[in-house]
Image 1 (cartoon, one colour):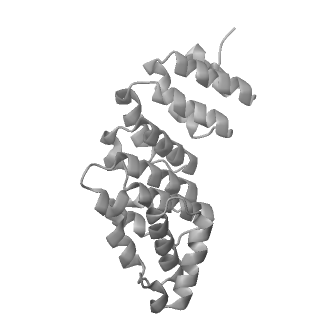
Image 2 (tube, one colour):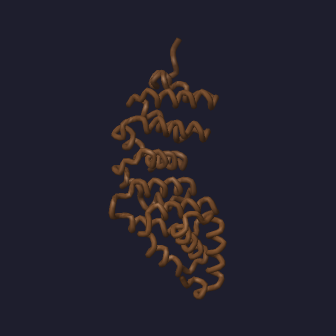
Image 3 (cartoon, helix red, strand yellow):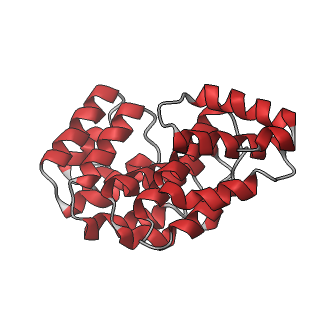
Length: 222
């Protein structure tokens, strides 16, 4: 029997990734992560770009983190330049889990402002993990260009990313409080409030921020 070319070029351990059943793909990714092999890395990265099931994608990411960073990071850095949004997003997500700062140069301003919200959110999370010491302020300025973007989940993701940088974000947020866009102003105010009071809910912080913006300059004092 002659195997298809793809099967002949793919290690037998990875054949299950092509199965139509998500449970089989999940078990395959788990098995690969349990017994890492550099030959698997390229195929795992490729599968991340097309895998439709969230749980399987998470297992693929886990399997990649089980391999040495020197085998995975270069492939993932290449992937963040892909034209496919899922490929970019999943590569960024995996880089954030690996945490190797050699990937930092791949976190361009274009990725932080990616037109796809899921990719941008992954880029923000990866950026705050990978940012070199001393460059947090510059990253805060780049992230602040996205204030007011998207819906609640997207804005919450950005606020969390900014807050993870610490008080270095305060000058940036205070500058954003004077932006001409009321959504930007409200998002900046809400993020600052969450930084000061981590137990405050994001919805409450946003509602309060909108009230402050509606009141105008007097409402923004303090």
